[in-house]
Structures are given as structure tokens and as C-alpha cells.
Image (cartoon, rainbow, N blue to C red; front, side, top):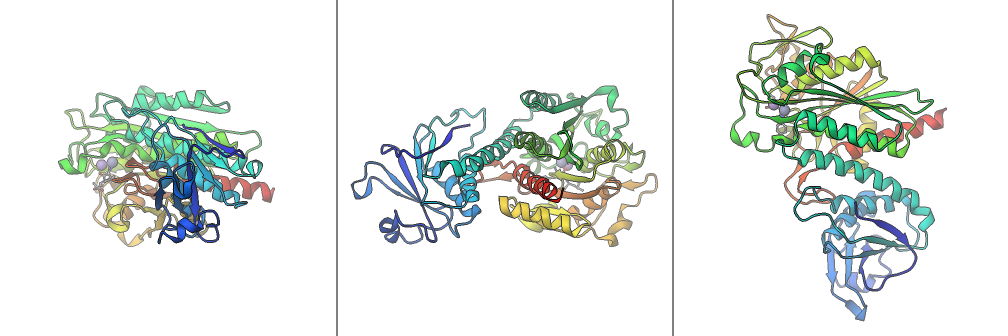
Length: 469
Ligand code: BES
Ligand code: MN
Ligand code: ZN
């Protein structure tokens, strides 16, 4: 990760970034006045050495001047500069600490590059020029932890599936956890997956066998236990119910849910949150082969219930059912959050940037939505429509896996059976897990969707609890 430092010594040789927006344009007023629209969030206007200044000046629009606007400004500014360039952002006096956090997050997120990209990492650094360094140190540290979590989720998701098999993914989690005290990882494989009938079925067609990863953070004194479950299909061909070629192109991203929940628990440990957290990642490759599971097969899940496979491309819910059953049976959590690139219907209903949220609890749905809005990882609530329950009926099992009906809703109804007694929410993040373009704080490719939203939600839950205690 490139460095961002707070400084009160100006550097006259680096490129200077001047945020412009409501009430901020003192330093840049002459330039901004000459440039209509310079304050639009995420817009950068470049002046090569204006007004005989020693350095290049970038006006970076912060829009409404909220956290999202500052994040957009940071991301746009970093995209404007060369890899080895030093950038100095001039803050206009004292601003709210959350805006500095937004700025720094935007700089890191917009400056993200896949860790194995041929260009290599950025070598330049960013200096935030301010008299208030002490006031912003904590915001900067939080931004770094959050951005690092998003970088990890993006890196895991951008990794080609030829590299990223279940064993590799599990090894990444072990390596990340080793660097951080207080975390434990369990990886189950082979015979240890006996009760995970869904995970074994979906993984049966691949030469790379499945894994079940459990990452836990248990700080002393924590009472509330939140389990985060993430779909970890390392590649989704659709299996015997094979996908058409265009539908398969991006299916290396089908472990984005697993990447987000793992990154969130690592980030929560870095933040030192006082919650007990467990991330569960059922990892499998949904491949086509003579050993693949078939339409018509009946699968016995962790909780002992059965599903008739009616379309092997509905593999996500089958592996998640086992993970959710395990959570309910073994972990007895207070809350379960499930993240999955589950259905193409997510994008049909809500477009490219918005996840579908399902939860029976209004307060939980509202809190998650708020965390999503604040971090720019948006979601929209869809109904758990009981009027479609009949479609799930099977003659030979407790349910079928791929019923007719509205796709994202049907998948949520399928999963609902497995959450047990805990409060829960399910997020179908198929659409926002990937970006076709550099846009605001997103870079082209994996977005890491969910990691930042989860960290924000969990931080809020943690501070609410401390206030209540
Ligand atoms: N991984 C896909 C969903 C997906 C599609 C994610 C597009 C990201 C972009 C999932 O496993 C899938 O294939 N879902 C099917 C379900 C159907 C067979 C019931 C779908 O949405 O078509
Ligand atoms: Mn599928
Ligand atoms: Zn899938």
C-alpha cells in the first residue's frame, strides 16, 4: 500500500490538490471561478503551474462536501497522477474528521492496482497538508484498515481461477491470519466435510476439491457473536447445467462474498472491535466433468434436510445452506449476515451498483442500508415473498434448488430455511461485485463489494454496544 502522511510542512515540488466544494474554495477560488463545474464530486481540473506557482495544481470536486464527495475527490485525484509522483492535498483549515477519512479512503481505493498487475504498485506518496495532524491521525488509520480490507477482497477476486482454487484461497486466509494476533483459522477438507453434503456435491466435478474455512476473532469480554457467511465458488461454469459462454466470462468473481467476509473479519481485528466475529467460507469450484453432480441428484445438507438439484448452476445456495446450517448448529450466533454473488436477477432488478438485501427485521435492514449508503456500497431491500413458497416443493426432497419465480427472491426463500434462530440478513451482491470502468472510488475489475460496508456496520454495532454497556 502506498503511504499517505499527514504533514504541516508544505512541499512546493509535488503536485498540489485543492478540494473545491461548498465553502471550501478559498485557496482555489480564482481558479475554480474560472472553471465551471470544478466542484462536481469526482471531477478533477488540472492546471499546469497556474499563477506562477511552482507546482501543478489539481482542483478536485467534493460535490456536496460529504464523506462520499471527499472519497470521490481522493479517488479522482490519485488517478490523475503518475505512479511515482508525490501528491500534496491541501485541506482548507479544520474539516470534520470523517471527511479526511473519506478523502484517504478514496485515495487508496482509487489508487488500487491488482497485486500481480504487470505495472507494479504505485511508488509515489500522498501528503495531506494540514495544521490539524493530530486530529486526523485516527481517521487516517481507520481509512487505511478499511482500504486494506477492500484491496484484499479485490485482489482475491481479481486472481484468475487457475490460481485461485479452494486450497489456494484457504491458504491465503491462513497467511493473512498469521500476521495478526487474536485470530484463529480452521480449514476443513476431505473426510472433515462429511456433513457438508452440498459443498461436496458442488465440488465433486473439480480436480480441486472443496474446503470449508472458518476464521474467528474473539476478543476478551465480547458478548455479541456475529457470523459472516460468504459464497466461495472459485469458478462457476454452471456445472452440467453449463452456462453460455458470455455468462461464464466473469465467473472467477463468484467468490466475492467469501472475499468480503474474510477481509471484513481481518479488518475488524485490525480495528480491535469488541465483537466476537466468525467468517465462514464454503469454497468449491463448480466444474463440468464426469464426476460433477447432476440435475435430479438429492443432496443432504449439514442440518440433515435435503434438496433436489434442479439446475447445477444454482450452486451457490447449495454450498451456503451447509455453511448456514453449521453456523446455527455449532456457533449459535446472535446475528448472521450472508453475502453472495447469487443470481443474475440482482442486476436485472437493481442495476449494476446495488445489492439486493433480504431480512425479516426492519431495524437490521435499516442499519445495513445506512452503512451501505455511507460507504458507497449500496443496497436495496427486496421482499421475502411467501406467495412463491409452493414453487420450492419437491416430490423427492425437502425442496428443489432452482424453483421458478423471481430469481433473487427465490434464492433468498431457499436460504431462509437454514438461518436457524438468529437474526439474519442476506445480501445478493452479484451486480456490484464487479465494475467495467474506473468510477468514483471503484477501479475496473473487482470492487471488493461488502468489505467496507461490513466494517462500517460492525463498527457501529460495536460502539453502540459500548455506549449501552
Ligand atoms: N454465480 C451465478 C450468479 C451470477 C450471475 C453472479 C451473474 C454474477 C453475475 C449463480 O451461481 C447462478 O448461476 N445463478 C443462476 C441461478 C439460477 C440457475 C436459478 C442465475 O442467476 O441464473
Ligand atoms: Mn451458478
Ligand atoms: Zn455461482
